[in-house]
Image 1 (spheres, rainbow, N blue to C red):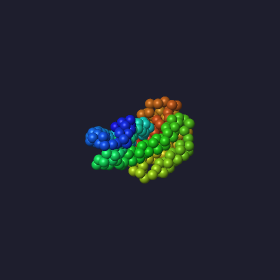
Image 2 (image 1 turned 90 degrees about the horizontal axis):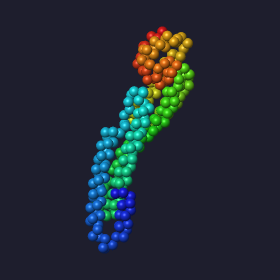
Image 3 (image 1 turned 60 degrees about the vertical axis):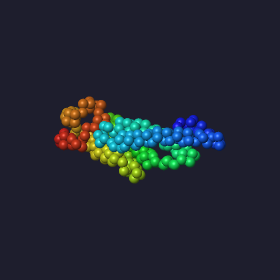
Image 4 (image 1 turned 90 degrees about the vertical axis):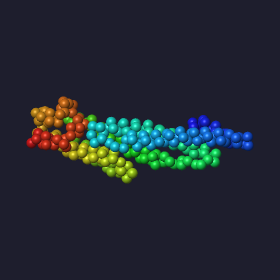
Length: 241
């Protein structure tokens, strides 16, 4: 029932008289039809939410940023469907009340709507934090300063720790928390690699072992963070020693 039809329906009931009583069964049948359609939408949304809501995050660091964008787009679309259906359910419930029909639970979607809002808040908050990480990501390695990066990562880690419990219960929170912990460890490795003992021949050897094809002068922190320095620390140590 669209907004215009709902307003017409209310006007009809407002002018209710003895001559209108014969129309009540027709209105009730119309509302029952509307309710059937709304219930079908609710089942569709419940299935869509259960199967496709972005509740999990990939553990691959190179997916961190695109995953945030994709998840927020998904949630925006799902949120529009949820909002429309909640409004339609509310109008059906109000119409049944006015027609003295057996009432439907107007709050049936409350828990799903709450879950949606919490999940959206988690992704939005992580997205805000990751805007800073993206900027750090683009730092050319040649101008990298360990202390500057460490301070920025510490600030973002503290912001994550301040998330309320309802947001920290999502797997997404755990994944991005682990990302930051790993970044801090990698930052210490990068500090070791910035020493004067690392000559061009050492860098050539290291980049080959890390399978980084970017030229040394063009390397960014993103390239280094995605090279799995923690998992390949032996290769790094072999070059350093």
